Length: 376
Image 1 (cartoon, rainbow, N blue to C red):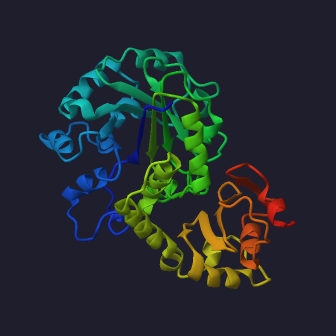
Image 2: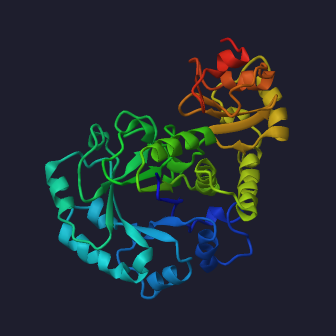
């Protein structure tokens, strides 16, 4: 049985969360207190860029959060990205966070894709002397097939796009043998993982709720003492929205305050299609269809769209909520027992996923195409 669940995002200080997550009139120094009233965990990533935290800031983090709130501190890039890992220097660096006391869950070492599996690094990680837990995440696939044993440090499981050199889906990686499982959701935006102008484009992705449910189900079934979900798909508040989906999948009661936040983020994402791309559906789908499907889809999106990002579209029709994931050519349906045929715009939307016949995944893993009678 899962004893504890910590669900939160990689940081809370994002200016594009003003509107979706934080009220426009709210001051920046109030953001953490606002965030911690809804979520019980965050991964602090400012420490990745700033090696020394200014005096008093750590105490402020402690003071502004509830008693049950937990922090994970991301290690500075000098330890993971710029030179060989030095366990002694890292252990000394962690001492500046002692003022977090019982709210400090641990430290995260996130190594870049250029770091391949090696016995030397495993040995160095095992030499870390720290009073808190140490979590280690790798971006290169070689560390996860099979999963690396770095006890007493804990191997973090990343969820990334399906690219040959990346670990891929978290659900395809074997869970560690320890009593804590830590998953980081980076999004599955394979179109922008390497081809982007700004790093934030890489994480511009919204997980369809059925996929979040499956991830949570997999973690819960492992019967670990503690599960941690850290959403890093932060642009425009998509990470908080997915953590709310995770709360719901965990069976947590969703308060009025959380539902209000969910509705606000959803509303802003729903208008993104028109606001950022001026209604040009060709910006989301690579091909123009001659059968006029785009006009039908545009009309329906204006009335029934729930979420619209460049890579995941969600629409409601005939009583079915459907999520189309362009990145992985997958379709998710929230009502697997529905027997009626999908209407024309969703037929077209399915075709727009790509030339290949899309895989269709339900919460019960049945084939929705045969369920609703669609033939390709």
